[in-house]
Image 1 (tube, rainbow, N blue to C red):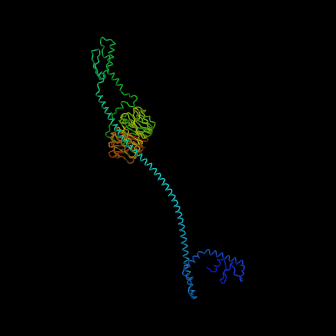
Image 2: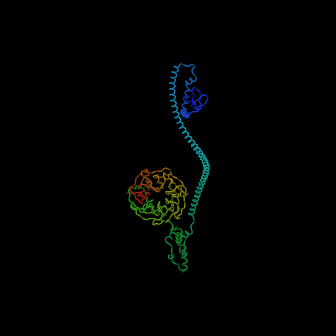
Length: 616
């Protein structure tokens, strides 16, 4: 830095000869008197001081760095220490020139280093700013993480409290389960004991009945039987032995015997009255009329107690072509069934009627229409005589008709939802119904009342009866077997899908189920095993929850209708598709029925069409 400018920083003016600067900027006045500075000089001094301050502030950092660099060099140390001897002027000049060149190089290098260092400082300042920004972001994330951690801790504590409450509840439920299991074991023991008591009582009742029959067989002769073989004296001399058979064939009369002589009319009348009192025909006729069943108000006639002859099918024909196509109902048809004699057909539809069709020489002829249902019919069934028709309805009831009467003889009500199935049982005057209200009910037709009710875990879609057993299909993919005498479930068979219908073979050995997984399953009832024959085919699709399949009378084939309007027939022995009947139905087929003679098959669909099939 210029040494002349240095005193200016202190606010003075340099004095020639090395004297101290005079304050105020003026030279010293000889004789100690101080000359008053002129105005222009003071202005110049103020300008110089202002420039000095401005330039000093701009180059203060560079001057400081340069001073530090000079202090670090050995040249500076040598110059400060001073040489021991002063060299010559030429040598000193050349040396100083070399030193000046050297210092210039060093100054350039140092200036370049300063520039590089400043650039590095700027880079590091940028990195520092970036790191500060990242640090602020990390701090924000840390704060958010701390908040989330506190929230999670709160949730953990809440979950722990809930787990504690659930554990307490679980322990209570576990204890209740143990108590329920103990009660269940106790109830099972009681049930076994009750069954044993029932069996003992039944055995005792059977023994009493047997002994009563034996006593009746060994009973002494009744007075009526003795009177039938006794002698009746008329007129004192005539002996007549009247047997019961003779009395029944030829009832005696008063005119058959002559009046004895010597007696008046009064005596004759007395003897005649004596003969009439001994007449066995009047006594037997009166007793027979007394014990004879009165059927004026009964739903069953005497003829219905005796089965009609049934044509037994030795070989079922596989249908090949349509013999007749009918628009059988005004709306869709839900059910179809042949009678045991195969000459009568019943169809039930959404139009709330059941129609009877007579089958003769491959032609269906309308015979009668059965009214009484207030909603659509879901199922139809003939009894073993073919003289009664049973139907289930959407109006939560089942109806019974007798042939020749279009009005229902009995209406069975009590279900809370639609009745999906109604079947005759093996008992003469009992029917069983299944409903969507998860109940199965047993009805007495003579009283038109429900005599037994069974609660089921799921809605009943269809049922069949085999002896004392009731087999039901349900929407929970289960087939259940119920004991009709005890009212309990004795067997439960799983199915591959929701069961839509059941059909029992003619020999009661197999049951066929149609399922919503587009398959048919045949179960052997003799083994009650889970092994079954499954029938599937490409294109076959179960059209609704009430699609009904059927077994042929000889148990050689099974048939079912598909959603595409086709009828599929499978062979039981191979489980392969035997034939597929096309082109007659244009809507999903709801039900199929095979005549007991094995000659005909009838299929019905949702578009009120019924088709009669056969192989000729």
